[in-house]
Image (cartoon, rainbow, N blue to C red; front, side):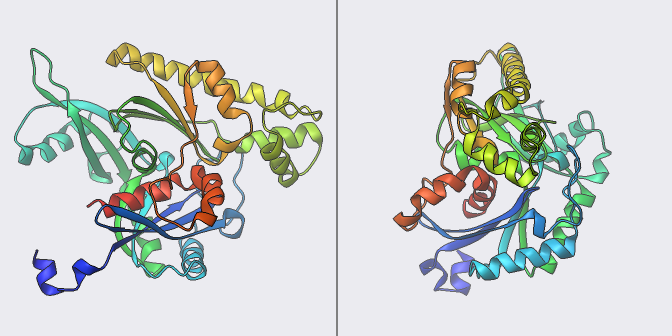
Length: 358
């Protein structure tokens, strides 16, 4: 109420937020606005990583190749090209730069929870607590008949990483509103009001994550070394063509039958991913007595032809490539374009949404 007294016109303007996802393949930026319950996609932009990173990534390398000045310059270029004027921004932190875990703490007064979480965090993270920035969510009441407790989902980000992103925001001329783990942004943009137990598979260029969401809360998040770049490399090797050509053929043919034998090349690479998901879902069922009901695919590889159908056949469950833009107002002419872009923009949309909800 005090803010409205300082600026009586504030209530007549929508709140705006920029979400920035500095990924391995590209930088994605969205500008969202909210007025009451209505949400609008104001603008969006993207720049491929070949124009940004200092060196090409090696096989499975866990580095985003960041040069803060290059990335800041790229962000400014995207903002200018997309005509994004909003300066308040949230940046996503990639899964390989964060540590996620969940644990229970005894029920206690709200003011005592932060100290209890910091105390328990040292048991679950490998770095000293003083060297990381902690973020957490109370995801549910985990009480049993014998012990009332709270379930905590904890995210730890190395302070060095936080400083890198602060530096990028400053050089880009942006006000850093917050930093948020990719998994939390994906949960917000894709799951929405779905209260089922869902496995969200985020297939990235550099790494992949498997996230278990229950009743709208992120419960588990696992990062591992499956990266979509290896698919194009395999096609390139089999057909004796450049990576660029292989990427185009892979995206067109996918797992659908083709004379070039692309599907036969890709299946052996994708099957270990299915095994990993099945193992994690089985572990979750054993620990929580809950079965995953649906599977969501996201990340740039989610649109690979035939992938959704292969997952559905393997798991005997409904598999979706959900549209993170579905709840926003935007010109109808953009509908097909945004549906195709959605898997790549789910992180940027999710983190920007978090800023609109606070």
